[in-house]
Structure formats: C-alpha cells, structure tokens
Image 1: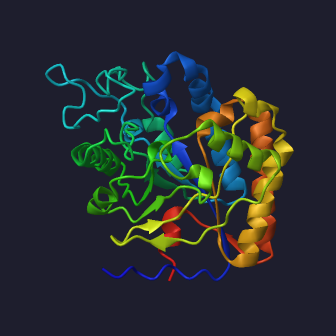
Image 2 (image 1 turned 180 degrees about the horizontal axis):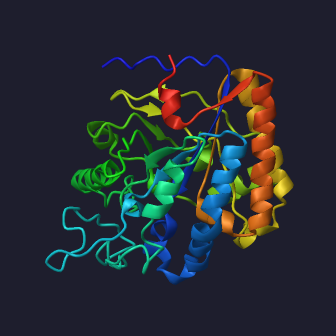
Length: 326
C-alpha cells in the first residue's frame, strides 16, 4: 500500500496536546494516595486556568482524555467492573486492571470521573479538541496488551464520547508507548502523537542513561526537534511530539523555569523558520506542582507563539486540524 502524501505546511505550526487522565495515569503504579493532592488541584484549579490561557491566546489545544473521565458514574455488573473490556496483562499489575475503580460517581469519587470537566472543555469560548488517551490508561505498546484488549478499550471510549456528540479523531498513547495502530484506524481515528524523535525516547526501556540524556537536553536548553507529520501505511497521521513541558516535582523542581521557556522558544523559532511543527505536550496534573511557576512559564511560551503568529510565520492548530490541511 502506498503511503498518502503528508500535508504540505505553508508556515510553521504550534500544536499542544494534553494527556488528560486525573488519577488514571498513575493509579496502576502508585495507588490513589500518591497523586491525590495533585489531582484534586487539577480539578479545582488547573483545568480552569489552562482554559483561560488557551482562550486568552486563542489556542485550540487537543485534550487527549481517558475515556473513564467521560462518565458521571459507573457500576459493576455481576460483580465485574466494565465487563466489556478485555483486561491487559501488564507484568507490574497482577490484580484486575480495574481494581481501583470505585464504581461510584463524580461527586463521591472525583479523581476517577470527569464529566463536568469534559463539559467545561467543550463549552470553552475558543474551541478545544477532545481526543483519546484510552479508556482506562492501559499501555497499548506493552506486550501485555492484546489486540482484543485494545479493541474493547477503544470501543468503550468511542461509546462514552458519543454521549457528548464527540467524534474522537486524535490519540495519545498512555506512557507514550505506541501500539495497535490498526485498532485506532478501525475505530475512525485519524492522527496520533508519536514519540519525540530523540534517541532516548525510542524503544521500550527507559534506562537511567536515557533519563539523564533527556535531563541534559533540558538543563542545556537544547533545541527540541521540530517535526513533519507522516502518514502510516494504514492512513493514520503520525504527529510526533517535540517537547514535554517538564513538571516541577522531584529532582526536576531544581531546573529553572527559564530553561524550559528558552527551549520552547527555540522550538517555536525553528518551526517558523523551517515550516515544521513544534508539538508541545504535558499532563495537566503536572501543572499542580509549583503551580504559579508552571503557569507563568506556559504563559510566556504562549505569548511568544502569539507574537510569531501575529508576524504571519506560525499558526496554532489542534491535532485534528493538522490532518485537515491540504
């Protein structure tokens, strides 16, 4: 099969994708309590402040949303949670994948449900794209995720989104582990965020050496890669990431925000100069650590992108809008 010709870019593009997951992104590794406070801050403050920034700077971000957040409530059926989903067999999680799912509702278990937040995003004055981040954060690129597990998971996403009249087009893989692209195509997806094209982001193993190499790029404010979209043989458009907006917790809190901003500005300049894409991504939860510094840094990045847009050398598009380019 001949690959489709990728979209031609008439100017640089700035796109933002968010892995919107609340507690689902970490519960299989750390349980509920470890990131409870961050997720509570995300619900109470982060989502609103992100939407305010995106409205102020007219940014149509792509919110790749865990499908369970579409729900206001759920309940077990014949003592099984979400019986339609074939469980993954991830080596690090021997219990049932939904063991932490409270089978409750958004009022009583707000870290697991997000219907009101999704409605807020959809009703934002500057249109935001709702994409997918799987239904329950199963790891598509792991050997423990079968084709049937991926298929039944995506089916639940599509079903849940349909209640909002949302057609899911864009996908961000949990933990950035790409897999089962044929399943995405089967359910009508058109684009996904591929791994950042740096050697330390390739392959499944995340060694200490790879982490240190990534940290070195951030500390030295090395220019992030700017990318071109490329169609896979099945017709899905791969829009690789360029840079993650690093959170400020753990050792990373010692990295000055100025370096994050400097690196992002280099990416925006390169995108404008080379007519490529600077694809920034992050988890809203991570904005909850050192929240004022994180939002101050993001504001500076969006302000610079706006200046380039006003000069006519850059445009800001969602992932699905990139697929619509001729």
